[in-house]
Image 1 (cartoon, rainbow, N blue to C red):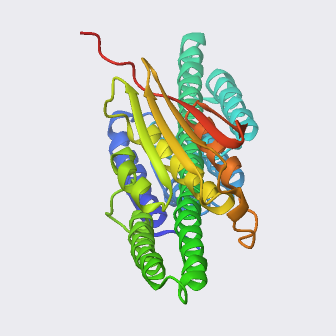
Image 2: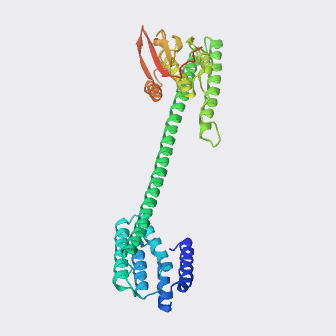
Image 3: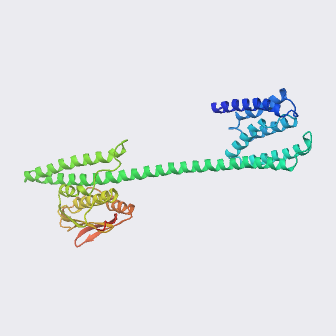
Length: 370
């Protein structure tokens, strides 16, 4: 189907070529006056504009041949070359480089033969032929530049689209990690406290009530955190979840574990990436303690170095006998390790003095020297 803009371009080219050719006759009285054949040949090029998107090589060839015939009849120079230039440029830019160059060289050869042996009057000479060759090479060079420019622009747009898809994939992965950490910690806590409540509801109702109160708080917290995580999917919502080290003490209080938080070094605000990663690593570590050694004491140490933040979570393993065994497996430690690696840091996890230790090192901006 012919596009509307092609119709407009064809009409404009037809008007320019015919009207300008009529005007050019006054400056070229030695050339043959335009007749029906001349006007018909002047309209061939504009008509081919309607077909150049579907058959660029054919449209170019027909236009150039019509131009050659126009010149052989002795009609005026000048305006008739408008549509051949358009056709050569379009054909080359659309990817048909060899046909464009071949027909361009054929046109140059025709012009040399025509001006040397076929034109009426004295031959034009080599200066004229060199000028025609320079003009044709200029047209072809411009077409090559335009083709390369469009290819670079398309490549840039493709890379931008791929980068956008990659970022969207990374954001989805980040959402999955956030949801895993939020759900794993709070559901494990709820499960442990529910088991405690069921065990103590007959013999120690006050302790059971405390466990149920913890469940209520944990369920409220998990809904709040999930809302915060999912809000990043909404247009205009903050791009970063709210969990960070400023909430670490609250996390320790809600864990239903004996947790001691120790901060060493020059305590300072850190960028969102390591801030969130450190919080989630501590949260996941406490979740693992809740599941596998719920009666243990835990020490959380944040060591602010010159350009690193070292996070250590160590439990004494005293609660292993009360481990929750029916929560299934998880992706806790690999997920923590991925968080640290994504920021250029590292994480180790393993047994330590009868308990378990998770140690992560995260890069942070160097502290300012006083």
